[in-house]
Amino acid sequence: MAQSRQKSYADRRRRDIEFAVGYRVFLKVSPMRGVKQFGVRGKLSFRYIEPYEILERIGTVAYRLVLSPKLLDVHNVFHISNLRKYIHDSGHVMLYDPPELQEDLNYKEFPVMIIAREVQKLRNHEIPYMKIRWSNHDDREATWELEELMKKHHPYLFKD
Image 1 (cartoon, rainbow, N blue to C red):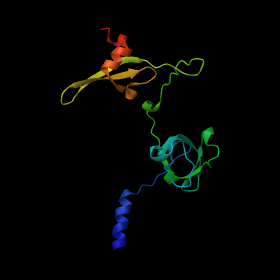
Image 2: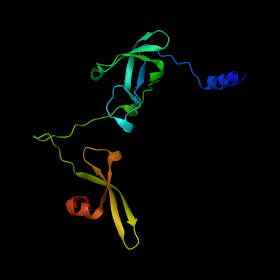
Image 3: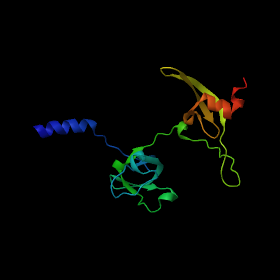
């Protein structure tokens, strides 16, 4: 009786997943001991990596994927539990404008605009901060900087 009750609980959460040839899926690469590392190591590593196209179905629970050239040494057949459906979203497409590189392959970053201002109040004085958007970065990578340092090093931001 206990087994049937537990089975009914498990069956409510269980889904039959099938993918057709040509679908795109994310590949699960959560960190496990003895498994090849995909990019970043440690606790910041990705759980799923880029969407890959399904090349063929092998049996009922295995699929062959078209992997990128950087994963040539990884076997291209995966169990269905390691795949997650990819739903196309135009927000996933990243527009990339490469920075202008100098001869020594460096580039200069400079503040483009002030996004926000904030004052940190301490007991006896206040410290003004500014959120700065930098060149070659978007608003998500903006940083908080001291206002007095920005006035000293980048006065052109304050010409208004």
